Image 1: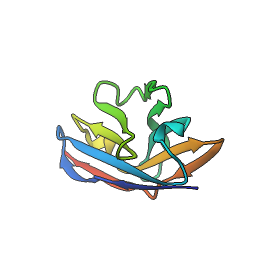
Image 2: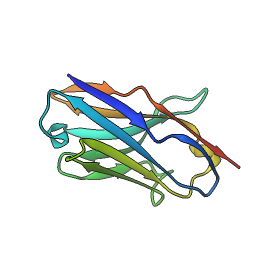
Image 3: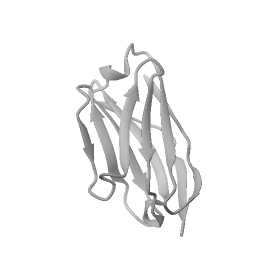
Length: 118
């Protein structure tokens, strides 16, 4: 079992920055035992969409809409996955969710709200 807790969301003005954290706990030794770790977001009235992923081999992937502005990273010592978000736009407003995949099973966090004002 894996438990995920996101934090770091909040209200920020356009152009500002936030760093989201996803703390993982449970029966695993390393966050890099997860085949994929990722951040997704869901805006009101829209489907959940992929924002960024990082594999156990540290290969990253980003949605076109966030490339060059967001950075995903992992810290195994803290068992935490981060999403650094810079140059935020009102369109980035959403609930952000952390997801990891381990042994073919998906685990989701509860989400953290990010609101970007214009």
